Length: 94
Image (cartoon, rainbow, N blue to C red; front, side, top):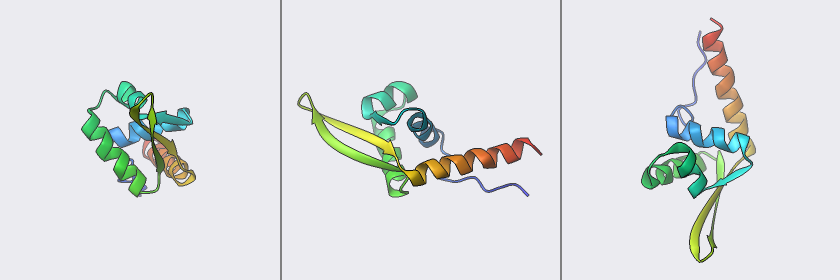
C-alpha cells in the first residue's frame, strides 16, 4: 500500500516554498518570488495556506519603508516535509 501524500505539500508551489525554507532558515517574499518565479498573488495565497496548516510562521514588517513579509519553517512544517519525502521514497522503492 502506498503512503498518503500530504495534500498541503503536494502542491508544486507550496512544496517549492517549504523546500526553500528547509535549505534556508527563513526567506522573505522577494526571495520566494525570485526562486519560484510565481506571481505575487499566487505566492500570497500559498503562504496563507502553509501558515494556516501550521507549517510556517509569517512575520510582516517594513524594510526601507517598504512592506516586508518574512516566512520561517516551523517544527511541524519540517516534520511534515520529512514525512512527505519518506512517503515519496516508499513510492520509488516499490
